[in-house]
Length: 298
Image (cartoon, rainbow, N blue to C red; front, side, top):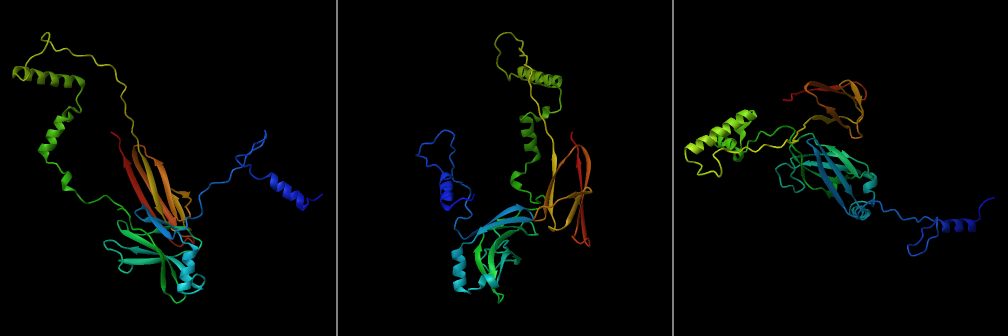
C-alpha cells in the first residue's frame, strides 16, 4: 500500500534533528548539521605557490558578481563566446606593471576549473599568473592577478659567500680548542696526551696547587648508552605529458593527472642505476634519462 502525502510529512518530521534544548528519549540519536569547508569565500583571488624548480600550483575563486560586471562592461556573451586562460608571466628582475614581463604564454582552461599545476620550464625565475578571458575578437581581458613566486634552482648554487670563509690559521685554532685534534685517537692515547699536558703545566708553574696528595685522582666513568643511527633514501621525481607511458628500471609507473610522478627508493651501499623512459601515447616519440647514484658509508 502506497504512502499518502500526510504519511510522508509525518515521516519527514520524525527524521529532523532534535533541538539541543529538547529532551531525548533513551535510544534516540541526535543528528547534527555538517560543518565541511565552504565551496568558496566570495573573494576574487588567485594564489600561486612554488612546488619545485619546474612546477607551480595556482588556485583561485572568481565570484559571479565579478563575471556579471565584466559582461556588463564588455559583452553579454564574453564568457560564452570567449575562452578563459591562465596567462603565465616571467617577471624575473622587473617591477611588473602588467605589460613589462620578460615573456608570457597562455594555458586554456575551462570555466569550472578551480586550480591548476603549471609547468614553467625554467628554474630560478620569478613568475606571476593571471586569469583572463580572450574575447571573440582576440582581445585579452584580465580578471584577477596572482602574487609573485620564485622557483628554486635545479642545481647546487655556484655562489660562494665570503662572509663564511675562514683562513687556515683560524680554522686550526678553533678545531684544536673544540677537541677536534683528538678525533681518531683511542682512549689510551687521549689519556697519555692529557697526562703529558698536565705534567707540562705542573713543571711550568701553570697550576698553582692541588688539594690532598700529589696524585691526581681519576674518577671511573659509568658505562654510557650513547648511540647513533643514520641511513639514506633516494627520491626520484619528474613530469612528462599526462597521456605518456612511463617506466623506471623497466617497471611501468602510473602518472598523476598532471603528468607528474614521484618514487622513493631504499639506498644501500653501492652503485645504483635508474633509467627513466617516457613514450608518447602514440609510441612515435621517446625520451630517456639515466641516473646513476653511488653511496658509500664509512
